Length: 148
Image (cartoon, rainbow, N blue to C red; front, side, top):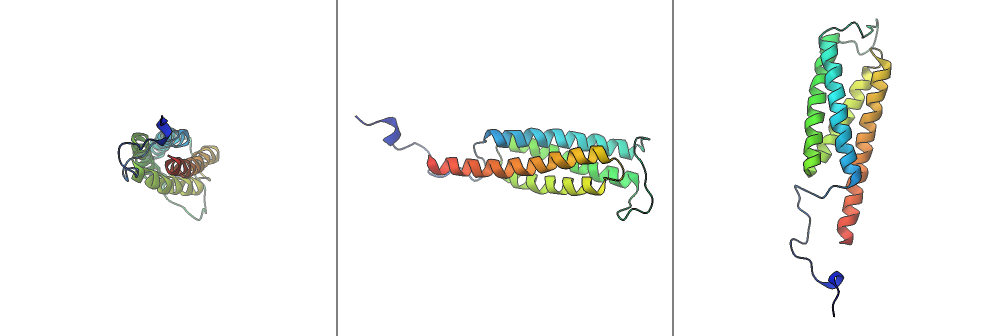
């Protein structure tokens, strides 16, 4: 009597190149992407509206107008939020794209440090966790695919 483990599995021998199973780490990354994107959107809207919340510094190397920084954060936030939704749907391209956008978000928030240090540090940490979770999740899923 043969066990279920020795029977050949129906379907393709290789995982789909466009969609893959998601691990808990990848779902965590997608949730962080949606959260981080929403926070960057709020940050961008507040900067575009010239909210009195932000401190304007003089003689900063990366000196842009507050509205310019607002547009950068708003666009990156929208893209990060949409990429997070795509990661939840299982799109493999969105994982690589998410790593790139989270890296850009971390850089943008590093340059944003003089304007609002606490918020920028939190979003840098969120973006770094996104990169870690996406990369770790991809490795775990690749290991699981080779076992099955």
